[in-house]
Each structure stands twice: as structure tokens, then as C-alpha cells.
Image (cartoon, rainbow, N blue to C red; front, side, top):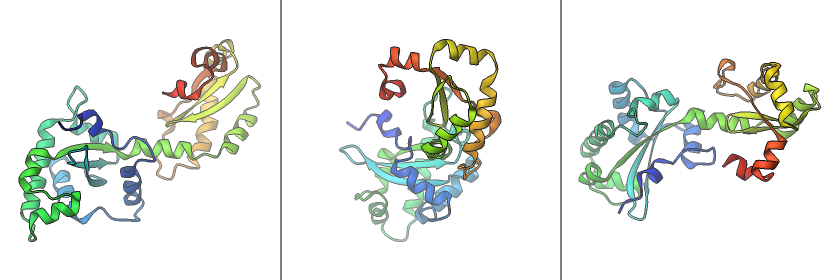
Length: 245
């Protein structure tokens, strides 16, 4: 049996993932997209009006099933390849699989040698039509997480001090935003009512933008979260793993 599709599809979700690090080099102009995938990228752009930022190949599972990860820059581009249920559109996966197999068939060198180079596994073109899994990823969400996580702790602490609010316990960046923890639920509720969230968000956003090398963060889309140390202690056993899992 092949690995589950859920496992096979989750290959670029945090900044340490290999596909993210390789795509980051393409985004920053350090390395080009693999020449073996340029024609496929052009075809995807012509057919679906979205150009992949990168395309990567690998195998997964004990069967070493071949896989293509089509990486777009933005989530709305990936959504073109989803069904309303949120799953990948099998018709579009099949169309890309067929076109890629056709491109491999046209190679002047023996196709199986080209595929051995791409997948580090001996394959025939017919294998692609049956076994190749095509998945889609977005670069921007992972990059935003990396950018937010790159703010030095000393600058977060300085921001907290500059806010001059002794009811704030900690400011904790996580994923693509941050949470302001007040000491008590009552303090959190008071700040929810008094409109201070906008002011705190403005101050954090100014700091964040200094590290936003891609210009991905937009103020109108960004907002800090509020919580309390009281909630953290009582419901998460004062444990960050439990809180963010």
C-alpha cells in the first residue's frame, strides 16, 4: 500500500522543511528553478494563469512513490487546484501528470534515465501515469512564519517595555502573528473592551515590517491575539507545547 495521501501531501509547512528552503533560494534569485521543470511550469502558467515559483521532485513512502511538489507563491494560487471540499482537484492533478509524462517521453535521452535523475529511482514514463502524485504548496504562509520568528527576543522585550503596560506578562510570537498575554482574564477582557488591541498591533507591526524582506505582511490583514497567563496556567499546565499543539 502507498503512504496515505494526508502524509504524502504535507511536505512544506514550516521554515525547516527542505522544499521551503530550496524554494526560498529560487525566490531570492540564488538558484534557478530546475531546468527539467521549466517547460512544465510554462505549461501550468499558460493553462491555469498561475506560474509556479518552484517545482520539486522526490519519492515518499517505503515504495518510493514519485511525487511532484508544485510550489506557488500565494495561497490563492494553490486554491485554483483545490475542490470546494479543500482537497486537491484530481482532474487537475491528472492533467499535470499527463503533461509531465508527455514531456519526459519527448526527451532525446532515454526517458527512464531522465526520471532516474529527477527521482533517484529507475522509472518508465508509464510509471508516471499510474504512480506520480502531484501536490501543491504555497510559499508565502511559511515565509511569514519564518519572518515573524526571526524577530530577536531582545526586540520583543524592548517593545513590551515601550508599551508601558504593567498588566502585560509576555508578548509571544507564533506562526504569523503574536499573542499578548495579560496576567489575568479580567485584564484581558478590559483590554478587549478599551480598544487597545489596535494600538498594540500598530506597534508590533512596525517592528515586524523591519524584517519583512518580501513585503508579505499587510496592516489591514494583521492583528495581534490576546490571552492571559491565568488561562495558560489553568488550562495548559503552563506548557507551551500544550498551548500551541
